[in-house]
Length: 128
View 1: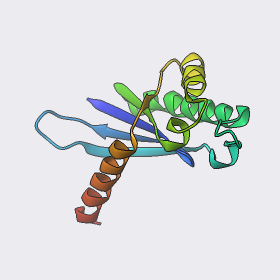
View 2: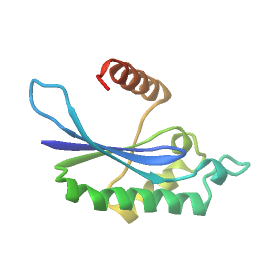
View 3: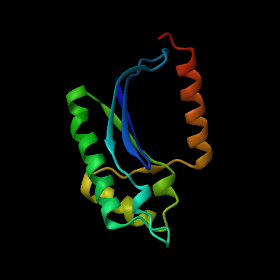
View 4: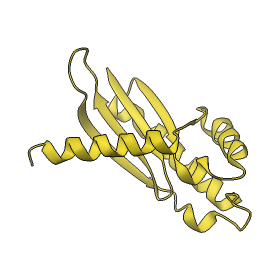
C-alpha cells in the first residue's frame, strides 16, 4: 500500500510517499514540495492573511493532484506551527477542507518535535 503524508509548514507543503508493507519499515519512494511562504503572511494579530491561505490551498491542491501519478492509496494531511498557532487557524482549516476536499489534522509541537527527531535519527543511519 502506498501512503502519502502531506506536511504543510511555514516554508513548504511536503508530500512524502512511502510503500507500507505489514511487518516491514516504510520504504520511502518520493518526496514532493510546494512552496507556502507563510512567515510573511502572519499579521500583527497572529492571523494568516488571505494570500497565505491561498498559497496553502494551492500547495495542498498541487500535492493532492500529484498523488494519483504516484499511485498513492491514502493521504494523511497535517499542518504544523505556522497554521496551528495562527489566531484564525479554524478559518484556514475550513478553507483548505472546502477547496481541497481534505481537512488537515494538527500536530502538536511535541508531536512535531518527536517526528523531526525520528526522521533525523533514521536519516543519520541510512547508507548514502
